[in-house]
Image (cartoon, rainbow, N blue to C red):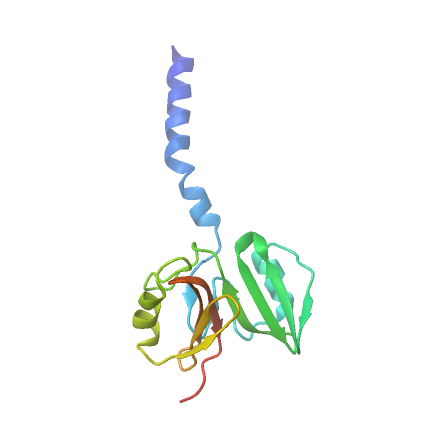
Length: 156
């Protein structure tokens, strides 16, 4: 009888505590316009990116920048002069403080983040909406956000 009670108590405790563990251990997933995404910030040394994500990737050249594609977490990092200059996400787990994330209608993002001040350009997959004064851009496919990119905001 004691073994059954002890097993139930341990099972109950595990059910209550285990869901909290991944949340506490997960890196921040907040998209901050002009600042960064999660632990990756604009201007940080590129040597600190992989350790902060706990992942390793092989860098690729992309024009005059170096590209690091962290597929497992849905992040892509561009670096120049050994510093992060742009970071993008396709992961719907990453969200802005107002809740904007990949996979939702792009008009929500434009209204809540850019406040209407944006440039639009056609791309091979759809189009890109860039808010340079805020430091954020959106890759749009159909009517949905395919990716969100963060970069240093332009001065007005």
